[in-house]
Length: 407
Ligand code: ASP
Image (tube, rainbow, N blue to C red; front, side, top):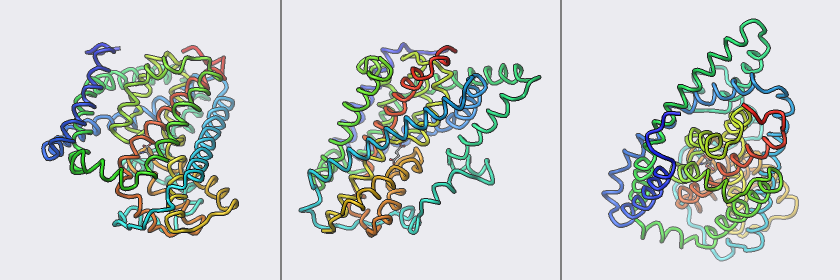
Protein backbone atom coordinates (compact mmCIF):
# COMPACT_ATOMS: atom_id res chain seq x y z
CA UNK A 1 0.00 0.00 0.00
CA UNK A 2 1.27 3.49 -0.90
CA UNK A 3 2.41 5.24 2.24
CA UNK A 4 4.66 8.25 2.62
CA UNK A 5 5.71 7.82 6.22
CA UNK A 6 6.62 4.80 8.32
CA UNK A 7 4.26 3.52 10.99
CA UNK A 8 6.55 4.62 13.84
CA UNK A 9 7.03 8.12 12.49
CA UNK A 10 3.30 8.49 12.03
CA UNK A 11 2.41 7.51 15.56
CA UNK A 12 5.11 9.79 16.99
CA UNK A 13 3.74 12.58 14.81
CA UNK A 14 0.21 11.95 16.06
CA UNK A 15 1.32 11.96 19.70
CA UNK A 16 3.21 15.23 19.05
CA UNK A 17 0.06 16.64 17.40
CA UNK A 18 -2.06 15.78 20.45
CA UNK A 19 0.46 17.24 22.93
CA UNK A 20 1.20 20.36 20.92
CA UNK A 21 -2.50 20.89 20.20
CA UNK A 22 -3.27 20.53 23.92
CA UNK A 23 -0.52 23.01 24.86
CA UNK A 24 -1.40 25.61 22.21
CA UNK A 25 -5.14 25.40 22.94
CA UNK A 26 -4.52 25.62 26.69
CA UNK A 27 -2.02 28.47 26.80
CA UNK A 28 -2.89 30.46 23.66
CA UNK A 29 -6.64 29.89 23.32
CA UNK A 30 -7.21 32.57 20.69
CA UNK A 31 -4.46 31.30 18.45
CA UNK A 32 -5.62 27.73 19.15
CA UNK A 33 -9.17 28.56 18.09
CA UNK A 34 -7.84 30.00 14.83
CA UNK A 35 -6.23 26.64 13.97
CA UNK A 36 -9.63 24.96 14.01
CA UNK A 37 -9.80 25.23 10.24
CA UNK A 38 -6.88 22.80 9.91
CA UNK A 39 -8.78 20.25 11.97
CA UNK A 40 -11.96 20.78 10.00
CA UNK A 41 -10.22 20.32 6.66
CA UNK A 42 -8.77 17.07 7.94
CA UNK A 43 -12.15 15.96 9.24
CA UNK A 44 -13.74 16.75 5.88
CA UNK A 45 -11.11 14.67 4.11
CA UNK A 46 -11.83 11.70 6.39
CA UNK A 47 -15.60 12.06 6.05
CA UNK A 48 -15.24 12.30 2.27
CA UNK A 49 -13.93 8.74 2.07
CA UNK A 50 -16.22 7.23 4.69
CA UNK A 51 -19.28 6.57 2.54
CA UNK A 52 -17.47 5.02 -0.46
CA UNK A 53 -15.39 3.01 2.00
CA UNK A 54 -18.42 1.66 3.85
CA UNK A 55 -20.33 0.78 0.69
CA UNK A 56 -17.43 -1.00 -1.02
CA UNK A 57 -16.11 -2.69 2.14
CA UNK A 58 -19.45 -4.17 3.13
CA UNK A 59 -20.38 -5.35 -0.36
CA UNK A 60 -16.96 -6.83 -0.97
CA UNK A 61 -16.81 -8.77 2.24
CA UNK A 62 -20.36 -10.07 1.81
CA UNK A 63 -19.52 -11.31 -1.68
CA UNK A 64 -16.46 -13.10 -0.30
CA UNK A 65 -17.84 -14.51 2.93
CA UNK A 66 -19.21 -18.01 2.72
CA UNK A 67 -21.61 -18.02 5.64
CA UNK A 68 -23.01 -14.52 5.99
CA UNK A 69 -25.85 -15.56 8.31
CA UNK A 70 -23.47 -16.91 10.88
CA UNK A 71 -21.06 -13.95 10.60
CA UNK A 72 -23.86 -11.41 10.82
CA UNK A 73 -25.56 -13.06 13.77
CA UNK A 74 -22.32 -13.47 15.71
CA UNK A 75 -21.37 -9.84 15.06
CA UNK A 76 -24.72 -8.48 16.20
CA UNK A 77 -24.87 -10.80 19.24
CA UNK A 78 -21.32 -9.92 20.29
CA UNK A 79 -21.86 -6.17 19.90
CA UNK A 80 -25.20 -6.29 21.73
CA UNK A 81 -23.63 -8.24 24.60
CA UNK A 82 -20.72 -5.81 25.04
CA UNK A 83 -23.09 -2.83 24.91
CA UNK A 84 -25.22 -4.43 27.62
CA UNK A 85 -22.12 -4.98 29.78
CA UNK A 86 -21.14 -1.34 29.29
CA UNK A 87 -24.58 -0.07 30.37
CA UNK A 88 -24.48 -2.29 33.44
CA UNK A 89 -21.09 -0.87 34.44
CA UNK A 90 -22.44 2.65 33.99
CA UNK A 91 -25.51 1.92 36.15
CA UNK A 92 -23.39 0.29 38.85
CA UNK A 93 -20.82 3.11 39.04
CA UNK A 94 -23.34 5.95 39.18
CA UNK A 95 -25.60 4.14 41.65
CA UNK A 96 -22.73 3.34 44.01
CA UNK A 97 -20.96 6.71 43.83
CA UNK A 98 -24.10 8.91 43.73
CA UNK A 99 -22.43 11.89 42.02
CA UNK A 100 -25.70 13.83 41.72
CA UNK A 101 -26.58 13.98 45.38
CA UNK A 102 -25.06 17.29 46.25
CA UNK A 103 -25.28 19.12 42.95
CA UNK A 104 -27.55 22.05 42.35
CA UNK A 105 -29.41 22.34 39.09
CA UNK A 106 -27.80 24.66 36.58
CA UNK A 107 -29.74 24.49 33.36
CA UNK A 108 -27.77 25.57 30.34
CA UNK A 109 -29.21 26.50 26.96
CA UNK A 110 -30.63 23.49 25.18
CA UNK A 111 -29.29 23.03 21.67
CA UNK A 112 -32.01 23.02 19.00
CA UNK A 113 -31.09 19.52 17.93
CA UNK A 114 -31.95 18.23 21.41
CA UNK A 115 -35.15 20.32 21.66
CA UNK A 116 -36.30 18.98 18.31
CA UNK A 117 -36.09 15.43 19.65
CA UNK A 118 -38.83 15.95 22.22
CA UNK A 119 -41.18 12.99 21.87
CA UNK A 120 -38.43 10.79 20.35
CA UNK A 121 -39.58 7.15 20.58
CA UNK A 122 -38.08 3.68 20.33
CA UNK A 123 -39.87 3.24 17.00
CA UNK A 124 -38.00 6.30 15.69
CA UNK A 125 -34.80 4.26 15.91
CA UNK A 126 -36.36 1.67 13.62
CA UNK A 127 -37.47 4.46 11.36
CA UNK A 128 -33.90 5.77 11.17
CA UNK A 129 -32.83 2.48 9.59
CA UNK A 130 -34.96 3.03 6.53
CA UNK A 131 -34.76 5.68 3.85
CA UNK A 132 -36.77 6.53 0.77
CA UNK A 133 -33.72 8.21 -0.74
CA UNK A 134 -30.17 6.92 -0.38
CA UNK A 135 -28.71 10.14 -1.78
CA UNK A 136 -30.51 12.21 0.84
CA UNK A 137 -29.14 9.90 3.57
CA UNK A 138 -25.66 10.23 2.11
CA UNK A 139 -26.04 14.01 1.93
CA UNK A 140 -27.12 14.12 5.58
CA UNK A 141 -24.37 11.66 6.59
CA UNK A 142 -26.97 9.22 7.97
CA UNK A 143 -24.97 6.06 7.77
CA UNK A 144 -27.33 3.41 9.11
CA UNK A 145 -29.57 3.23 5.99
CA UNK A 146 -26.45 3.19 3.80
CA UNK A 147 -25.07 0.25 5.77
CA UNK A 148 -28.36 -1.62 5.43
CA UNK A 149 -28.60 -0.91 1.69
CA UNK A 150 -24.99 -2.06 1.22
CA UNK A 151 -25.80 -5.27 3.07
CA UNK A 152 -28.79 -5.93 0.82
CA UNK A 153 -26.99 -5.15 -2.42
CA UNK A 154 -23.94 -7.13 -1.29
CA UNK A 155 -26.11 -10.20 -0.73
CA UNK A 156 -27.79 -9.66 -4.11
CA UNK A 157 -24.49 -9.25 -5.98
CA UNK A 158 -23.24 -12.41 -4.32
CA UNK A 159 -26.14 -14.31 -5.86
CA UNK A 160 -25.42 -13.25 -9.44
CA UNK A 161 -23.79 -16.23 -11.12
CA UNK A 162 -22.43 -15.11 -14.48
CA UNK A 163 -20.93 -11.70 -13.73
CA UNK A 164 -20.01 -12.33 -10.09
CA UNK A 165 -16.27 -12.56 -10.70
CA UNK A 166 -16.33 -9.43 -12.83
CA UNK A 167 -18.13 -7.46 -10.15
CA UNK A 168 -15.81 -8.84 -7.49
CA UNK A 169 -12.74 -7.77 -9.48
CA UNK A 170 -14.25 -4.34 -10.04
CA UNK A 171 -14.97 -3.84 -6.35
CA UNK A 172 -11.50 -5.13 -5.42
CA UNK A 173 -10.02 -2.47 -7.69
CA UNK A 174 -12.21 0.31 -6.29
CA UNK A 175 -11.41 -0.83 -2.76
CA UNK A 176 -7.67 -0.62 -3.44
CA UNK A 177 -8.05 2.86 -4.88
CA UNK A 178 -10.09 4.02 -1.87
CA UNK A 179 -7.49 2.59 0.51
CA UNK A 180 -4.76 4.45 -1.36
CA UNK A 181 -6.62 7.73 -0.84
CA UNK A 182 -7.13 6.74 2.81
CA UNK A 183 -3.36 6.36 3.19
CA UNK A 184 -2.77 9.76 1.69
CA UNK A 185 -5.20 11.29 4.19
CA UNK A 186 -3.68 9.33 7.08
CA UNK A 187 -0.34 10.98 6.36
CA UNK A 188 -1.99 14.26 7.38
CA UNK A 189 -3.23 12.90 10.72
CA UNK A 190 -0.61 14.60 12.97
CA UNK A 191 -1.38 18.08 11.69
CA UNK A 192 -5.12 17.43 11.47
CA UNK A 193 -5.21 16.24 15.06
CA UNK A 194 -3.19 19.25 16.16
CA UNK A 195 -5.84 21.53 14.62
CA UNK A 196 -8.74 19.59 16.12
CA UNK A 197 -7.36 19.61 19.67
CA UNK A 198 -5.93 23.15 19.70
CA UNK A 199 -9.10 24.41 18.03
CA UNK A 200 -11.49 22.75 20.47
CA UNK A 201 -9.61 23.70 23.66
CA UNK A 202 -9.05 27.21 22.28
CA UNK A 203 -12.73 27.57 21.42
CA UNK A 204 -13.65 26.41 24.94
CA UNK A 205 -11.55 29.27 26.36
CA UNK A 206 -8.26 27.52 27.13
CA UNK A 207 -7.00 24.86 29.52
CA UNK A 208 -8.07 26.69 32.70
CA UNK A 209 -11.62 26.97 31.46
CA UNK A 210 -11.81 23.26 30.52
CA UNK A 211 -10.43 22.36 33.94
CA UNK A 212 -12.94 24.64 35.66
CA UNK A 213 -15.81 23.02 33.76
CA UNK A 214 -14.57 19.53 34.57
CA UNK A 215 -14.19 20.40 38.26
CA UNK A 216 -17.65 21.94 38.43
CA UNK A 217 -19.17 18.56 37.63
CA UNK A 218 -16.17 16.74 39.06
CA UNK A 219 -17.94 13.75 40.61
CA UNK A 220 -20.01 13.20 37.48
CA UNK A 221 -16.98 13.48 35.20
CA UNK A 222 -15.15 11.06 37.48
CA UNK A 223 -18.01 8.52 37.29
CA UNK A 224 -18.13 8.63 33.48
CA UNK A 225 -14.35 8.30 33.18
CA UNK A 226 -14.20 5.53 35.79
CA UNK A 227 -16.92 3.56 33.99
CA UNK A 228 -15.19 4.01 30.64
CA UNK A 229 -11.88 3.01 32.21
CA UNK A 230 -13.34 -0.21 33.65
CA UNK A 231 -14.94 -1.13 30.35
CA UNK A 232 -12.05 -0.05 28.09
CA UNK A 233 -9.12 -1.22 30.16
CA UNK A 234 -10.51 -4.27 31.96
CA UNK A 235 -13.61 -5.78 30.32
CA UNK A 236 -12.82 -5.31 26.63
CA UNK A 237 -9.15 -6.41 26.91
CA UNK A 238 -10.30 -9.44 28.89
CA UNK A 239 -12.77 -10.35 26.15
CA UNK A 240 -10.05 -9.89 23.53
CA UNK A 241 -7.67 -12.14 25.44
CA UNK A 242 -10.19 -14.86 26.25
CA UNK A 243 -12.20 -14.92 23.02
CA UNK A 244 -9.50 -14.20 20.44
CA UNK A 245 -6.31 -15.21 22.27
CA UNK A 246 -4.61 -11.94 21.26
CA UNK A 247 -2.41 -9.84 23.51
CA UNK A 248 -4.40 -6.71 24.48
CA UNK A 249 -1.27 -4.53 24.86
CA UNK A 250 -0.06 -5.37 21.36
CA UNK A 251 -3.55 -4.85 19.96
CA UNK A 252 -3.79 -1.49 21.73
CA UNK A 253 -0.45 -0.42 20.20
CA UNK A 254 -1.60 -1.56 16.75
CA UNK A 255 -4.74 0.52 17.13
CA UNK A 256 -3.12 3.63 18.62
CA UNK A 257 -3.51 5.80 15.51
CA UNK A 258 -7.23 5.23 15.26
CA UNK A 259 -7.77 5.57 19.01
CA UNK A 260 -6.07 8.97 19.04
CA UNK A 261 -8.07 9.97 15.97
CA UNK A 262 -11.30 8.90 17.68
CA UNK A 263 -10.31 11.00 20.69
CA UNK A 264 -9.53 14.03 18.53
CA UNK A 265 -12.49 13.86 16.15
CA UNK A 266 -15.14 12.56 18.61
CA UNK A 267 -16.56 10.63 15.67
CA UNK A 268 -16.47 6.86 15.18
CA UNK A 269 -17.59 7.27 11.57
CA UNK A 270 -14.84 9.72 10.69
CA UNK A 271 -12.30 7.42 12.38
CA UNK A 272 -13.45 4.41 10.35
CA UNK A 273 -10.85 4.76 7.57
CA UNK A 274 -8.09 4.57 10.19
CA UNK A 275 -9.85 1.80 12.11
CA UNK A 276 -10.00 -0.41 9.01
CA UNK A 277 -6.38 0.37 8.14
CA UNK A 278 -5.06 -0.31 11.66
CA UNK A 279 -7.10 -3.46 12.20
CA UNK A 280 -6.23 -5.05 8.85
CA UNK A 281 -2.69 -3.79 8.29
CA UNK A 282 -1.22 -3.44 11.80
CA UNK A 283 -3.18 -6.08 13.71
CA UNK A 284 -3.54 -8.33 10.65
CA UNK A 285 -7.17 -9.24 11.20
CA UNK A 286 -8.64 -10.75 8.03
CA UNK A 287 -10.04 -7.94 5.80
CA UNK A 288 -12.87 -10.24 4.78
CA UNK A 289 -14.18 -10.22 8.35
CA UNK A 290 -13.13 -6.75 9.48
CA UNK A 291 -14.49 -4.91 6.45
CA UNK A 292 -17.90 -6.27 7.38
CA UNK A 293 -17.62 -6.07 11.17
CA UNK A 294 -16.04 -2.59 11.46
CA UNK A 295 -18.46 -0.48 9.38
CA UNK A 296 -21.31 -2.21 11.19
CA UNK A 297 -19.60 -1.56 14.53
CA UNK A 298 -18.98 2.11 13.77
CA UNK A 299 -22.69 2.49 13.12
CA UNK A 300 -24.42 0.35 15.75
CA UNK A 301 -21.86 -0.59 18.40
CA UNK A 302 -21.25 2.19 20.91
CA UNK A 303 -20.21 0.83 24.27
CA UNK A 304 -18.86 4.17 25.48
CA UNK A 305 -22.03 6.00 24.48
CA UNK A 306 -24.29 3.41 26.12
CA UNK A 307 -22.31 3.60 29.36
CA UNK A 308 -22.30 7.38 29.21
CA UNK A 309 -26.04 7.61 28.66
CA UNK A 310 -26.85 5.46 31.68
CA UNK A 311 -24.51 7.47 33.94
CA UNK A 312 -25.83 10.79 32.64
CA UNK A 313 -29.52 9.94 32.99
CA UNK A 314 -29.17 8.57 36.52
CA UNK A 315 -27.00 11.56 37.45
CA UNK A 316 -29.73 13.90 36.16
CA UNK A 317 -32.34 12.02 38.24
CA UNK A 318 -30.12 12.32 41.32
CA UNK A 319 -29.64 16.04 40.68
CA UNK A 320 -33.41 16.53 40.61
CA UNK A 321 -33.66 14.55 43.83
CA UNK A 322 -35.63 11.78 42.08
CA UNK A 323 -35.10 8.25 43.40
CA UNK A 324 -35.22 5.62 40.66
CA UNK A 325 -36.59 2.17 41.47
CA UNK A 326 -35.46 -1.22 40.16
CA UNK A 327 -38.02 -1.18 37.33
CA UNK A 328 -36.79 2.21 36.16
CA UNK A 329 -33.20 0.97 36.17
CA UNK A 330 -34.28 -1.88 33.90
CA UNK A 331 -35.95 0.63 31.57
CA UNK A 332 -32.74 2.71 31.55
CA UNK A 333 -30.72 -0.43 30.80
CA UNK A 334 -32.89 -1.25 27.77
CA UNK A 335 -33.34 2.24 26.40
CA UNK A 336 -29.69 3.27 26.87
CA UNK A 337 -28.68 0.19 24.86
CA UNK A 338 -31.14 1.14 22.10
CA UNK A 339 -30.20 4.81 22.24
CA UNK A 340 -26.54 3.90 21.74
CA UNK A 341 -27.42 1.71 18.75
CA UNK A 342 -29.46 4.56 17.32
CA UNK A 343 -26.79 7.22 17.92
CA UNK A 344 -24.89 8.29 14.82
CA UNK A 345 -21.08 8.06 14.90
CA UNK A 346 -20.72 11.83 14.96
CA UNK A 347 -19.83 14.31 17.73
CA UNK A 348 -22.32 14.59 20.58
CA UNK A 349 -24.87 12.30 18.94
CA UNK A 350 -25.27 10.48 22.27
CA UNK A 351 -26.60 13.66 23.84
CA UNK A 352 -29.44 13.72 21.34
CA UNK A 353 -30.51 10.08 21.67
CA UNK A 354 -30.40 10.48 25.45
CA UNK A 355 -33.79 12.16 25.11
CA UNK A 356 -35.20 8.68 24.53
CA UNK A 357 -33.83 7.38 27.84
CA UNK A 358 -34.92 10.44 29.84
CA UNK A 359 -38.44 10.27 28.48
CA UNK A 360 -38.72 6.53 29.09
CA UNK A 361 -38.32 7.09 32.83
CA UNK A 362 -40.31 10.33 32.90
CA UNK A 363 -37.40 12.73 33.49
CA UNK A 364 -37.51 16.24 31.99
CA UNK A 365 -35.36 16.58 28.89
CA UNK A 366 -34.25 19.97 30.25
CA UNK A 367 -32.09 17.86 32.56
CA UNK A 368 -29.64 17.64 29.68
CA UNK A 369 -28.88 21.29 30.40
CA UNK A 370 -27.04 20.18 33.57
CA UNK A 371 -24.44 18.19 31.68
CA UNK A 372 -24.39 20.07 28.39
CA UNK A 373 -21.33 22.22 28.94
CA UNK A 374 -19.04 19.26 29.56
CA UNK A 375 -20.50 16.90 26.94
CA UNK A 376 -18.01 17.71 24.17
CA UNK A 377 -15.17 16.81 26.55
CA UNK A 378 -16.63 13.46 27.66
CA UNK A 379 -17.59 12.71 24.06
CA UNK A 380 -13.93 12.23 23.20
CA UNK A 381 -13.44 9.57 25.83
CA UNK A 382 -16.62 7.68 25.00
CA UNK A 383 -15.88 7.77 21.26
CA UNK A 384 -12.44 6.28 21.94
CA UNK A 385 -14.09 3.42 23.84
CA UNK A 386 -16.63 3.03 21.02
CA UNK A 387 -13.86 2.59 18.44
CA UNK A 388 -11.82 0.34 20.75
CA UNK A 389 -14.92 -1.83 21.22
CA UNK A 390 -15.53 -2.03 17.45
CA UNK A 391 -11.92 -3.02 16.81
CA UNK A 392 -11.87 -5.71 19.48
CA UNK A 393 -15.08 -7.01 17.93
CA UNK A 394 -13.27 -7.57 14.62
CA UNK A 395 -10.57 -9.73 16.27
CA UNK A 396 -13.12 -11.70 18.29
CA UNK A 397 -15.44 -12.37 15.36
CA UNK A 398 -12.51 -13.44 13.21
CA UNK A 399 -11.68 -16.06 15.80
CA UNK A 400 -15.30 -17.16 16.13
CA UNK A 401 -15.55 -17.58 12.32
CA UNK A 402 -12.53 -19.78 11.61
CA UNK A 403 -13.47 -20.31 7.94
CA UNK A 404 -13.26 -16.62 7.19
CA UNK A 405 -9.78 -15.96 8.49
CA UNK A 406 -8.05 -15.70 5.15
CA UNK A 407 -8.45 -13.02 2.46
N1 ASP B 1 -19.40 10.79 19.26
C1 ASP B 1 -19.78 9.44 19.45
C2 ASP B 1 -19.24 8.58 18.31
O1 ASP B 1 -19.03 9.07 17.23
C3 ASP B 1 -21.25 9.25 19.58
C4 ASP B 1 -21.71 9.93 20.86
O2 ASP B 1 -22.01 11.10 20.84
O3 ASP B 1 -21.70 9.27 21.91
O4 ASP B 1 -18.99 7.42 18.49
